[in-house]
Amino acid sequence: PEFIQNMAIVCPPNPIHGNSPSDRPSEGCARSIQRCCVLNCLCCLLCCFKPLLNKWSQDPAEFTKFAESNFVKNPVEKEFFEDNPEWLKQQEDEFKYAVSESKENGTTAMIQDMFIINKTQWGFKIRDIELETKDNKIFVWYGTKDDAAPNGKWYCDTLRNSVERRLDDYGHAAIFIKNTEILLDLISE
Image (cartoon, rainbow, N blue to C red; front, side):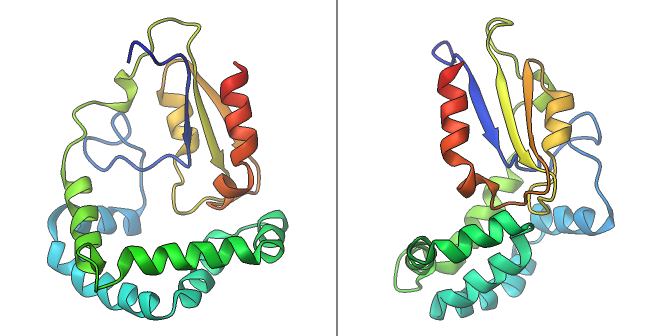
């Protein structure tokens, strides 16, 4: 922490422990059910996600289609995916490798990790994060259409020294399209 001058949070995750809205964002019914399952039901996660991950590991192009239909929210993002087929192929190959059942990690381990990471309390509250001085900043980059990580505004409102970097009409794919801009912004401060 004493080495951190500035930091960036891109597509912020949803803290799932604590009381809403001070420790985590408010959520609708569907997210409440998801949170309950993630916190309490490893068996449920394995039953729901393992067949899907196995299917995608056999045909990573199906994962790409799913990702595009669920996370690509605007014409700029769609154009990025269309103009970068080699990038998409690399993502498919990396996904296939990560969830391959022939590997130690496989889909079961991936789901167990997701469960353990989310079941473990973070040990701090988002609102309590402070940087050494008021000159240090936390840049929060988020797309206003990001359904996968919809909490960017909440992070900006909750974190001290936050600098909002809202990307209007971008979804979860913003991190890929804006990564150079995000890094340049971070190191220029």
